[in-house]
Amino acid sequence: MHLDRREIPLKTREFDLLELLARHPGQVFIRSQLLDLVWPRSYDGDERTVDVHVARLRCKLNEPQPPRLILTVHGIGYKLAAPKMRLV
Image 1 (tube, rainbow, N blue to C red):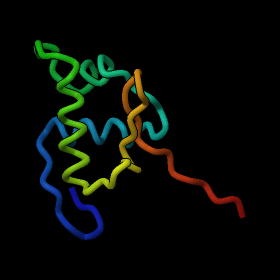
Image 2 (image 1 turned 90 degrees about the vertical axis):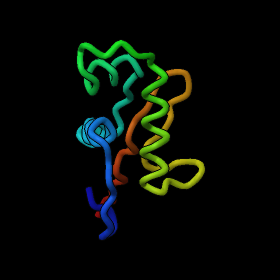
Image 3 (image 1 turned 90 degrees about the horizontal axis):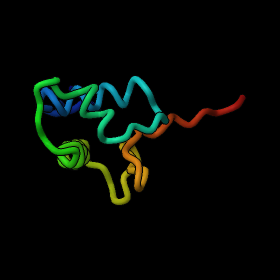
């Protein structure tokens, strides 16, 4: 993946997670949804693995604190920030 002309090496799940969020900007996903949609059906891990992957993504994308791209919806899950629209 490339961001601001630099290559960002992502692992498969990181890429899949980011792709899912990017395809639905502004939509909130609960952790269990993300597990169902991104991880293989045979995965027997905890929902907190989503938190770990989001943290790794934020680090690789150099997200500031607080994050502006991958947002935490407290008590619910995560969403990708919806692009701001400019009215002309």
